[in-house]
Length: 276
Image 1: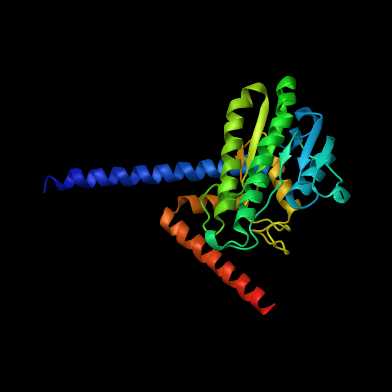
Image 2: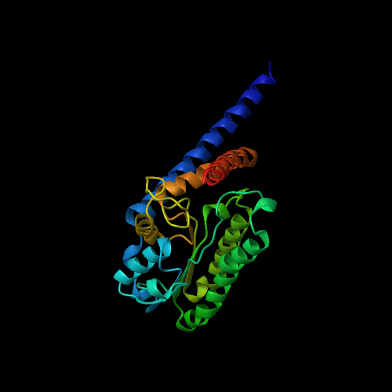
């Protein structure tokens, strides 16, 4: 009987410690949620970060919305896009948002025109981000201020099978951004990795905005609050909650959920294209 008491005491303290840890995690999450999305930092976003903004992929979706928001804050904007006719607004020292994804979720070897897709995804999602950063970073270092916003994706935070190459390229953007921030924050430069879930844009092929799939305008207004506060951000409170939930799951459960969702999307796309 004597050995039962110490054992019971041990499990009591393990349980109490676990509850205390979870309470602290939840409290910290709620505090940061209020600090970022309640108070925000958008009043600091403007020419004080740098007179000029360079926005890539600025004619549609998230890039266009960033350009419009930053232009409203008095920044001079240089727009870069593949469509000369559509060029029109601007953003905050650099916003790398040239992006390309899959036409639909697919197994690696079954991706149509695989060699070309590999080349395009790596050139657009990886090489362009490095080269644009190389282009603007020296001036920021010289002025000792600047902001680089790189649009990664939640699928760059955790692996997404059936979107394998896209997921891997976005992981590159996420890691690149985090490393650059650590390298250059002492020089007055803030580098942010933006990791959204689905946003209603042409790239995602989502036409109707919902609470968990906001319009690009709604998303960017939220994400602007995080500049200067979070070097890696979901940009949107609901996306932040979603990301926390997924990352808290055992990897085999997360993989199963993601595979089932993407298999369903793949089947729907193939069924639809066969009918057409």
